[in-house]
Image (cartoon, rainbow, N blue to C red; front, side, top):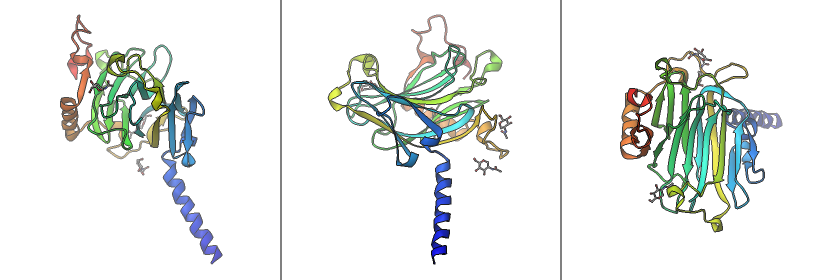
Length: 280
Ligand SMILES: *[C@@H]1O[C@H](CO)[C@@H](O)[C@H](O)[C@H]1NC(C)=O
Ligand SMILES: *[C@@H]1O[C@H](CO)[C@@H](O)[C@H](O)[C@H]1NC(C)=O
Ligand SMILES: *[C@@H]1O[C@H](CO)[C@@H](O)[C@H](O)[C@H]1NC(C)=O
């Protein structure tokens, strides 16, 4: 009987080990900023960042990635989050850095967050696109994904692609593909510009502000080992691009939820749009 119990416990622990393997914050991330305000909870299954009048907080991945399909579930600051910014991005750092950005700009209770995106290659960004979301991102966790491979970068929300930045390096447009990147996230105060261009300030009576993270999952190549979690199955993430339903979904999002696109901002580019704008 006792042996049987041990066996069952052993099997159970083997299963929970497997379930955790996809994402354990203790194993995959380090808190880099605002220690005390950032917390890893629930045996590494949950991470929370908070912001108070003193400062914000942040974390980064232990590993660097060179291409990957990276998912994170995030629940954003609820209530009056005006002035706060939650960032979630990949970056190689340095002056010629590559970077793939999600940033969530808070708002007054009931008013929409803005999801801001950008892509930097070799230090050059200025490729902002912004969106409203089709749900309240503070009520529940939602999955924010970056698929980054040699063909392109696809930003997705709950599996719906919202932005596609193709690799046009062969046409002279630099593309992030040589510099490994870390995953970063932070929660900080940006009341000078975040909400309606700085018109709405942070309400510190609502502090601390908290954002939560869970179910991190990366199918990726890590630079350190050069090893990849891709394999020879035909639809592996490494060679994935947008299929026809994906193209239809992205059109739906861009038609109904896109509120800013650098490729249509003529005032900003009086002498012509960046080259990728005309070959997308
Ligand atoms: C906040 O709400 C206002 C009013 O609905 C809207 O114009 C703005 O885009 C929203 N988001 C941010 C981050 O300012
Ligand atoms: C290929 O990768 C997928 C996704 O990680 C995994 O489920 C599958 O077991 C892998 N196949 C092989 C043969 O390694
Ligand atoms: C897996 O990734 C490596 C890049 O590090 C690439 O050379 C290889 O072709 C990939 N394999 C597949 C099946 O996509």
